[in-house]
Length: 206
Image (tube, rainbow, N blue to C red; front, side, top):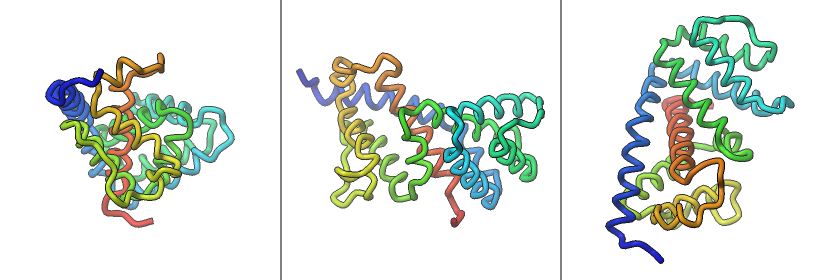
């Protein structure tokens, strides 16, 4: 049974507001110089293309050590190169934490979603952010001409379908079959990842 719009909207609004409050840490990414942010994005993509089984897990662990003053050089040259950019840019502790939060969120996304988002342009990222905003009012929908990755045959179409289903969060939760992550958790990972990548891209050119 579908729930009354006001109930579904209230749940969605509370969820999105909570996610946005917790994602404010990402605002510190703006303090990283644009050239360094673009370099980090390039190195992140290179890392995703490595043959390591869990490249993001390696970067996640390395950033944790880095943030806590343990500067032992990682065995992965790609990860070491990523940390070198943070050193050279003299990233603040808040900025480094923001980078770590972004990497953590990307690491937890299912399948190859992190790599697909990392190569996405601003149009795709902004469309996803607008859809998350729409969930607050039960109005998440694709525009008439969505970016290619979000179209029916696109690699990220499942993200659009999921966010549209999240318009009625309570209904989605009742039919949810994934025991590893809740619908709210997946919305949070998507928002944090997309918002972080969007902020990394802001004001820079490839």
